[in-house]
Image (cartoon, rainbow, N blue to C red):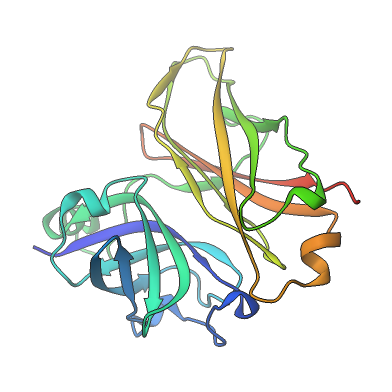
Length: 244
């Protein structure tokens, strides 16, 4: 049985050990390995943005060509993207599909598309995403450090809303590389109420420390909230960095 996963991929910038060239997910020609612990899985990017450059984070669809244990591909699982034993990116699994499920979702189409859409969070949406308590100091950012804050999800609709997954990943990459974060709260939010999810982002510093890793005034992040109906809402935020 062939597995497919929908995942957020964070490609490392070149100065952090990432690849030098862009990837074209829609062409189906990019076939790196995914590594989790001692397991190595051959994967193939089959859908996503037209181009995926080093230092960018995007939502992609991936075919897992190597038979794998379901636990490795469960929502929230994190895998390393590897080329010739070199780490070039990080994958955070959002959803897993078996071949039969993909065909049912695709219907008569030759391209598999999961149910539910991804939207930029706007006023009037069923939920409102915000963050609070995030303001790390520049001198605290290092390979051994972390950034913590809280994602606040408010239910603006007249119905109960169930949040099944929260993903946080980097919106832009400089000298500091932030590893993707995933939580699976499965929390029910009543109308006019809110839920909070604690986030801990771990950081990696570029291979050669650059001026950006010390003096950049902000870290740009994206927060994606997935609902039980499959809809996903995304919002971008900037975490200020205080100078020394």
